[in-house]
Every structure is written in C-alpha cells, then in structure tokens.
Image 1 (cartoon, rainbow, N blue to C red):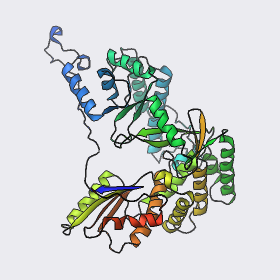
Image 2 (cartoon, helix red, strand yellow):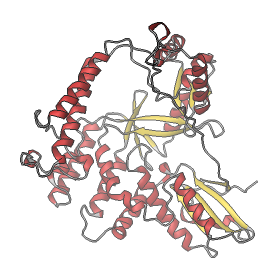
Image 3 (tube, rainbow, N blue to C red):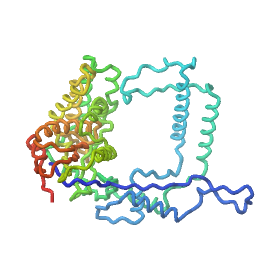
Image 4 (cartoon, helix red, strand yellow):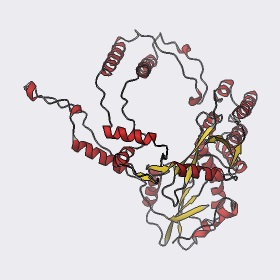
Length: 479
C-alpha cells in the first residue's frame, strides 16, 4: 500500500511564541505612594490578552468534525491545545510537600556526590544497580542535613517562601467564560476530543463516529481477534517463563530479570488519532501500552536495538537531520539535468509487518551490527520480540482484543522494529535496481529519492511488490 508523489519541501506546522516581560514595574526612589505603580502581574492588559489569544489560536488549529457547533469561547479554549494546564483553584498541600522534598533531595544528592574526596561519602549506601538505566530501582538514599550550612539555609528559605506563597490569592489562567466552556466540553459525552494525527491540530468528533471508526478497524479479522476472557495472568506467566530461561542461560542477570516484569499488569488501551489530512478522516490506530505485561520488555528490546537504526545508510533522524542531508547534497554542486525528485510512503506499515519476517530482520541486524558474544544474544532478544508481537492484547468499549498481525503503534520498540524491517527490504530493493538513484533517504516509512528522470518511476516501486505483493498496493501515477 504505497502512495507516492512529487517531492517538495513543506513545513508541517508553524509555531508562534510570545515573549513575556517577567520583571516587575518598580517605582523610582522618589515616587510617592500615591503614584506608585502596582506590580505588573496584577495589571489587566486587554491588548496583551488579545495578542496572546490570537497567537495561541494561530498555533493550534481546532477542527470540528462533529454535528454540534462550538461556541467561540469553546474554540478559543481548545486552541490552547490539549496539554494546556488550567491553574488549580486550590493548592494540594500533600503534593506540594512531596515536590519540595524531591527538590531538596536532588540538591543534597548533587552536593553529596560533588566532592569525591569527601571522607564522609559512603558509596556503599547504594547497592549495585541493574543496567540499563530505566531498569534501575529508584534509590531512597537521602544525605543528612548539617553537611552544608549554606545549602540547608537555601532549602529552608525556598520552602518557607513557597509555603507562604500558597496563602496568597491564586490567579487563574482561564477567564470565567473559559471555565464554563471547559465544564461544558467535559460534560458533553456526545463529542470526543482528540489530537490530530499530524500538524498538532485539535479535532472534535461525534462520539458515535469515533466509536464507529474504532469498531470498523477492530472488526478487520486480518489484524484483530476478539477474546472471550482477560489473558493478563496467562500472558504474564509466559513472559515470566521466558525471563527465567534467560536468567538460567545467563542472558541477563536476576536483577534485570526481576526488573523486566510489570508489577501489576493491565491490558493495553486502544484509541485512534484522526487523519484529518486524508479523505474521510480515517483514524491511526494506537495501543497505549503503559502498564501492560510487555511494556518493560519492549523498552528493553528497544534499548538494545535502537543504535542499529542509526547505522542504516538511508537513516533520517528527524526533519532537521533531513535538511542537513539536503544541505550536504547541495554543497556537492548542481544536480544533473532532468533529475527526478520523488517521495514514497508505505501505508499502514506497522500493522503490515509479518511477525516472522520482522523478527528475522532484527536477528540479522543484531548479528551483523554487534560484536559476537554480546549479551543478551540475538536469540534472546528475538524471543522477547515474539512475545511483544504475539501477546499484544488490549481493551476497547468493554471488549478485549488481540492483535494477530503486525505490530502496534504505542509499544516502545515499534519504531525501531519497523525501521529495521524496512532496512532489510530496502537492502534487497536497492540491490535490484539497474539504475541506482542518486539519493535515497528514509524516515521509517517515508522515502525521498533523487534519480534520473529518464528512468520510469515505477522502476523504484515494482520491486517492492515483487518482495511483498500481499502488503503493498500498486503505485498510483503522478498527476
């Protein structure tokens, strides 16, 4: 299912920022109390508010696909984006105390380990921690007070000032009408609000349409199968058995093995991101894997494979890396006459990667990209990959499903896994070209190439279908 078109550079989105003067307006030493200006934070500036709202609206588009019209205030509120945090009306003293404790602890730890010659430093206070870092058990060690008087005074002063600040009036970052709009949107179960798949827009959909699109995708038995019971315990047991075997065969330490298990696993959660840039606004399927049985082993696999991705010749890290590569191409001089710029992409790559072929691609990449004898071995990592792929279950609308084909967007290893799979096909593909493209760059499934215009563009596509006819559609001609 490859779509392709003319190559052209275009910014996906533009972001606007506002500079705020945080300095207080202070009177001169000779100013009288009658003429003293109030602190700037309390000045109501309608012009500034209008400019701020205009900037936010321009930065985050609101797309209403629902049958219910939005009020201007609701639109303005949503344009602040979904990660906007309204000021709480009250201060949670427990959370505030916890934050102050963490802040002071970080400072004390930094001071404690700063002076390596300190005779009182007791490095035995920390046991050997498993690697990689995300598997490390958080330490509860906190240096005692009294080691540094200046630091103690600073921490005490900051804590006192913040606790005093909470007693002052809290100024909301929402107007009253925006608070009312927030309540209206929150209580309206007929609409669903989601971020767009691209461009950072906020999309409002009818809940019935949202559920209908999710159900349409989940009813596709090629990719999903409904389960009659919750397999959490049985799947967790399979992971436990694989980890125990890895410990027995000295692939991993017992500390790492213990850290790879999710303490209280739960099923994944299915949702979609509307593709408003495509006709019909289909949804991109995402399976949130936080807390699922395979969450940590997916992080573990990604940790050991992600460095292999940067070794791929066509690898593009992000948009800035792509621009740097284009700049380097321009520095080599003008391109030959009648040069073709072409872009291609693979539709639904993640869900169309066969389990065996994807795992084999990872095994070969691990064998070729790492030193022989490196632990964990390619065999053990591929065992974990198979578990991640085959135990990918989730819930939606009171039903439990299992993904039977491809990998899910949402699990940590998915981008690395897809990159390595595409690199394996890419290597076979480029080797079959009688006329090599001058440039071949790829960001996961998005391909940019420069080649002779005399070469039919289908030459760059047809080998894909010879390799994976069941997964890739026939090319569409450039209009």
